[in-house]
Length: 164
Length: 384
Image 1 (tube, one colour):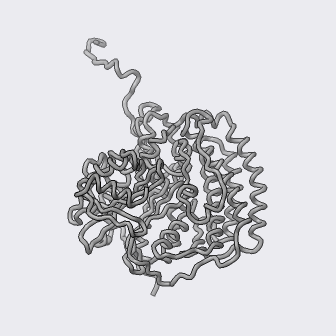
Image 2 (cartoon, one colour):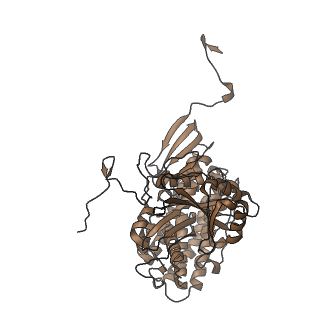
């Protein structure tokens, strides 16, 4: 299916929850209501015409000026060899989204990484712990306003520059 | 019941279970190929689960991309997966080219494919060589590494480096093939064919090796999709999917090759042996591709004209590359400035690592090593 048809199928089912679709972009995408992301994903996985059986990639982008963190879902179907991009926005001050781990197990680690690096909390996630950073790390490194701490457990994070 | 006058409660339903034991494997362990750690909950020799603890090799490569600009990030991508760095180069090149609408000259694409397929062979040789080493046989490891050294020499001649190549550029590759390169690669390939037969005799039909791998951690196609297992690991489960063929990029549509899948020849479909065998078969396909490349490579420039200060128009794109460890997904966001706004790479090992906890349930402790090796997990690729 082409992106336009997939978006139309989405709009048929969740008319009020799809806030924008963009078919002209290099990668067509649909901006959806974050609170409904799990139902939308379950529909995309189970619908016979769509069958998105793979969560190929899931990541977050901090749009500081706009005031939200956008979580991007790249879905793919092995059966029909088509893909779709979903974007769910969460308020930057307290970003919360439902987890899609129930729909695709791959989301477990991907969401842990987003939580770790961008601080988005995923509701009903079975194991929401930091993945890459140490457990006692303060702050979320991929946020645009993240400032690296001077030291970590007495280990300095800065070095004198050798270039003069 | 009572023993020696004391009332003792015996739970007969539990059979021979004993107290759960917590074992620590890593972060420095010879079979983990990099620095990663498992916390193993074991009941005797049976694992209840192995919990991976990653992050020891987290070098914040994605954050670095936001500071160094599009061209400057290329050498850093080598470090995402230093066993198969060509694919990371290619991924970053492709995602930027898509962002900025740059077209790579035909010869440049062929140079990329030649470099990438050579790298795929060397990466698979490392994978199968260390897999059998981890299982307990030393000799085949030397056979595999002997050939891998020759590929390293070839790649060194191509780009001056043996592991972190930095060969590709946005818009093509850094250098054309050196003089006489075709003859050298073809000579290597014809002697390598014989070596693969030798390797087959030594390992593939080896009874002990089969016994250690057959039926171990078999994965169903549905589970593989749910966990987003990619590349050779996915194909071992019987799913005939290869990004090079199904979402074609570069010059792969002009090249003929098969996509081998697991058949369960040693036990179950999708077991550790299938994952091993798919890699051996893929090496043979890569050899085919390389021979065709040298026949078809056109003359011309190898790199497009790209401005030094590259400012792609605002937008976000994703591309997928079939790396040695499977579908590598690059996502980049541009805000119109000369620095990427965000870059994310989802690698094959990341997905495979996320599945280990589930796979380990009920396996023998000694099989954990087989599973890690057969999934071809490279730790830096998980952490980035």
